[in-house]
Length: 559
Ligand code: COA
Image (cartoon, rainbow, N blue to C red; front, side, top):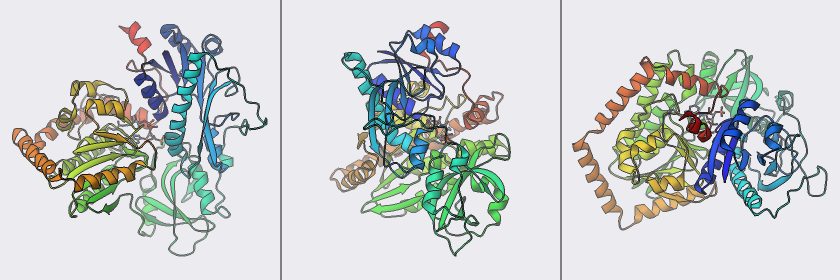
């Protein structure tokens, strides 16, 4: 089918649906929801058989839905309506939630339902549920809806709120008043639920040290001694510990609300002086190492997969400790949400000199990659539980093997960030991996890649375990099997001789120097594209046009 995606942005859900439909042979083109006239133009150019709206905040124009079947992916159960579906579900403590695929009509989210899927709720942030359960359910529901459309034998029904079996109902935007934390009375579970329902956006409007802030990234913590509820009692690992009515919560990130254009940052960077004045206590480090027999597992679940200079330095030190252990396999597990998304664009944007901070950050992530590449006394494996983008993909490719959970999406390219050249030793690792096609094509393809497709090219070695929780235990079991296998000594010996031969042919340092020379031009040169693209990205500036690599229909007219 010729399918037009009408979407606010090419976010993770949209990317996953795009990959699923494209791999099934559908011709998919994308148009960002900018204005009704632009949508009408896209429809006239592409002449879609179906319009799909995976992530839309406005109604589809009548001129479009009257003439074309438009399927809206709504992150709510049948009958649910409104812009804060998942936020309400978390805040209200729903135990089961779902996704509906419904046909667009005049009233938003009220059209006939073509498919609906449900899932058990997990205690997690809105973003985590969205990237996990919602995305999986949306894939199932959209594929089912398209099948039903094609057969023509299905007649979609309009769920009537209140009818037997219809739990969903219309709910308004979840406003800050309803998200407000009552520090005197809210217990830890309530505070965590309120922040989770607003994480990644918009956050819960509150205050830290008297400064109005949106709060994100909260975890339960224990107070060193009893404290007045609401008081900020300590600092640790870039976060602050705050007392609730029955315990404490660590708050890792905030966005100041007292200045226009403030960014979401670690609390230690958003409020540095106040943070510094707090007593320091031992907080759980973001990075965690564990051992399973001959396998060392390094977890680095950095918020949003972004890795600042300091986080890279800490990861490098943790790698060093892990490599001092007598294991045979080192498994880099990233985090459950993301493997990694490369250098930390928010921290860079907030720095006094974004160019200098970009430079420090890229060298710090390169150091991590080099430590992995130079590990010759054991096998290294990247276990991708979640998506990876840009430098985060190439950190994975520095490992000997790349294993990924089915459903993970990769963006193994840098050019979308203002034509960034990229580093992380990609000029060494990519040609080593790509089995089919040109390494250059991988870099120039600005589109997301599903892991099955990535495996066909050679970017990924194994794909398994589609469940969120099932993948890592399976990866650890497979790593243990690898460490104990009869082939292990030969595998290690082959790796050692290949590395030595590669180093003799061209040292790793030469690849790095070349890449960094290009990156220096990106950071300090005349062309400001990277700085402009980064500012747009971190500032969440709405798109003004759809890039041609997504808008296939516009490519035809542009040619
Ligand atoms: N630095 C800082 N924040 C980042 C980040 C990075 N490198 N990559 C992603 N994020 C943040 C996003 O701003 C967003 O923040 P929010 O929670 O405040 O909304 C969050 O992570 C989720 O990202 P989003 O873009 O919504 O995720 P996605 O799954 O829809 O898209 C990518 C994934 C990889 C396509 C997209 O995040 C991206 O292009 N990231 C930048 C990668 C990059 O250029 N890195 C630098 C070069 S190495």
